[in-house]
Image (cartoon, rainbow, N blue to C red; front, side, top):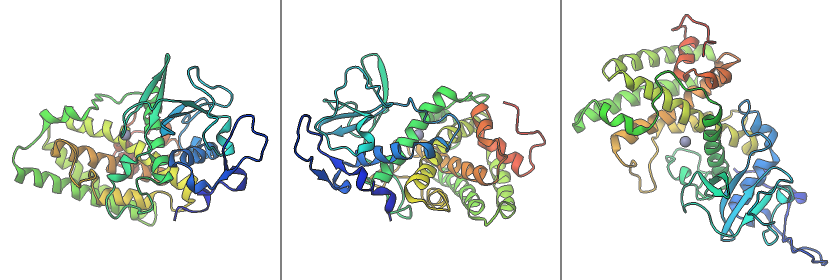
Amino acid sequence: MLCAPLVLGLNGLARFSAPGASAPIPTLPVAQLPVAIRAAAHLAEHEDQVRKLWPGFWDTRFTYGVFPVNGGTLVMHPRGERPAGTIPPVDIALPTILKERAAFVPERQGSFFFDFEFRLGSQRIPAFSPHGHYALQRGPSADRRWTADSAASFVLFVLHESFHAHQLKHFAPLPNESSPAANLVPMRPHRGLTEDSLFKAQLARERSLLAAAVEAPDCTAATDPLNRYVEQRKVRLTQLPAPFAAFEDAHERAEGVATWIGLAGVHRIMTGDATGPRRDVLADLREMYRDSSGEPFGDGWTQYVSWHLYATGSAKTEILARCGVSTWRLEISGGRSLQSLLDVLVGRSGGPASEP
Ligand SMILES: [Zn+2]
């Protein structure tokens, strides 16, 4: 149930802001607003909550674009600082909270499905499509409320991609960090389908141990499955080229944390679900993402490993959020991998979680 918080309240009802009109301005039910605008209103309304997700994330000067709205692009900006090259969005129905924060570019920017940013003069603006590409990849047991065109799906997407912008700016690199999935190709351990399926079965076992840890009623109960997970992963990695572990660490830290930020943000600001994102973290562990035709993207093997790490990274983040040292976010930003903090958690690492 995408429930009460979705309704912005009577004060937030949209209006057609016809400039100069003296007659009462007609209102639109919030449900009839384009999904991107509903999502932007949620984000604006709950900025304080969003900022609490991660130190330094989503500062008040953050600007981003959403498209397409009325055939163009809506630009969300800090209050009173409309970017050059934009016009006031006078013909667009907006909730009150967005009136001072939205500007309009009459052309649609970026690609239809997926883009990260567009240029406005000399400014590079992160941009997000409301087409819920991300949601389409979620398996059938994932939350059905989050259809591709729901505001929750869009908020999830905006938070995920915005967090990447934060990571690029503020995260110290990991030792031996090598992130692009293409780097995996020369490390492929097998060529045959049978070997691939054995490899995938190993990864599936690891996901199921992490799921048991995420599902555990408390941190003590999580220790046993976590220990077994750490052991399994260690054995698997001994069968792979050394850079494989560095790739896993980097990908989990980039995509896993961003995935968790999206899920945790939606739960925090939209569903008010006290259990947080655990249910969706579990769904991602149990069902690998697919594209809308049900097939893995691109190179099946590379993509399989990549999506596996989205899910395991998100699960490790969830575990650290519940059971990790209080400074876990700073440790991650400062150059620690999720795995190294998990090792500390289960007593596999003697060192304090403080070195960068
Ligand atoms: Zn991502």
